[in-house]
Length: 117
Length: 109
Picture 1 (cartoon, rainbow over the protein chains, first blue to last red):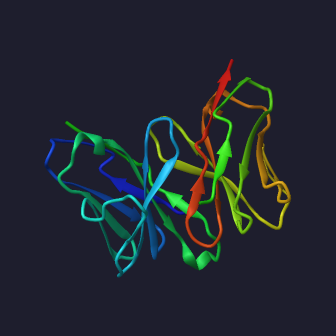
Picture 2 (cartoon, helix red, strand yellow):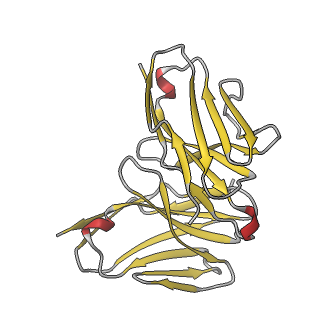
């Protein structure tokens, strides 16, 4: 099946700094990538949808100036958490869609654990 | 908005069958999915079913869909300790996925 990777898998940063998380589709071209945030004992919350070459569409309540998403190529999307605060600590998961298959399957990355101290 | 509901916890003994249930509200759902998440890991697609099907079997996994009642279930036959994880159901119309909160399956020896 299609493989999606994320880097880094874990990151610890200080309050006020910025952190970039990469999401790559390894063996397919993903015109659409999704970023999710997962809170403990809760479901995944969709943060934004990014289409290659265009601006990301953010879900209600997600600050686009804080969570910068770039999808510059068909295989790479990045999420930058700017001026991170402890409440941004979470598990961030990306997913990518493989449009040529004609289905709506999404393939998920392994996730990035962000801890802000 | 659309909603997907799951029971939060299920405990079974090794070798038994597990049935995880899910209900959804979106009548325009096209695909329905089951994902597995092991601790600290991302989501692994287990199986999916198209909305015009009512059953799909894949080795130990059986998915049943009652579209009239908007009810989806995942049956795991001969459950093993390695099946212990959180299972998410999700649905999509034509765009994004809506997830349930996940069912934690605990398999005891």
